[in-house]
Amino acid sequence: MTTDQTIQVAMWSGPRNISTAMMRSFENRADCFVWDEPFYAAYLNATGLKHPMHEQVIAAGITDWDQVKNEVTDPAPGGEQIFYQKHMSHHMIPGFDRNWIHGVTNCFLIRRPENVLASYAAKREEVTLRDIGFIEQAEIFNMVADQLGKAPPVIDANDVLANPKTLLPTLCTALDIAFDPAMMSWPPGLRDSDGVWASHWYNAVEKSTKFTPPREDTARSALPSHLADIAEQATPAYEALAKYRIK
Image (tube, rainbow, N blue to C red; front, side):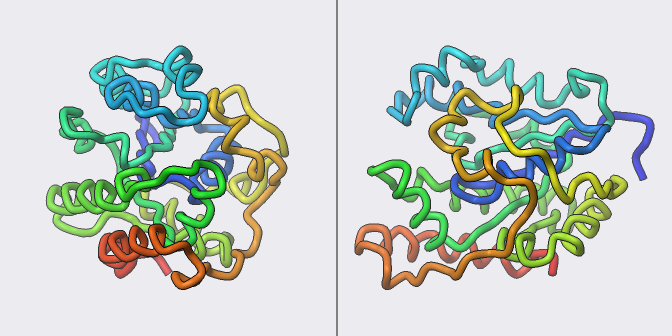
């Protein structure tokens, strides 16, 4: 197990996954510093997209992606052994150099596109395939796998929710870190480490204290047609990673 240096854990996800709950789980460790969506402000500043609270996100974050790239590859600001980074795959837009990704320990959190879209549409009216990051997540996965010569760790949200007692220790082993039982639960409420956008997006996780059993999957036929089309486009990328998921 790694004990003498910082391990930067980059967890790649899309929106409306259990990414914030995973961040809570890691933050409850005594040896971990977390960073919530490091590239979000740079992404919004570069694209001009009008996300909820976009002005506050840009004002509160770092808009120079090169500066963010340097900071996420540095040791944890608090000196902790683990530097956990909650990354959104779609933040890696063309023009953002991805080579820094080879310098961190990468893992991938996936969720069925139908479930993502049903949740995302409840928070933001407009949604495109690009907004949910499936294509970019697959690109990053392939890049990392090519470097490693094997698949990096992949976890599915439903698997984590259904069996965290097995999935979390197995994930830690795959990341070459010790499992800490403190990861199984956390106090309710928001955190100083949460992004400024937490008041809009984190209503459910704010009330949470642990991983709870997954809800029934959303059927594609239950989605409006434009969302069903996006789900169909995203499915090949989801399935490409799902075959490597930790079970």
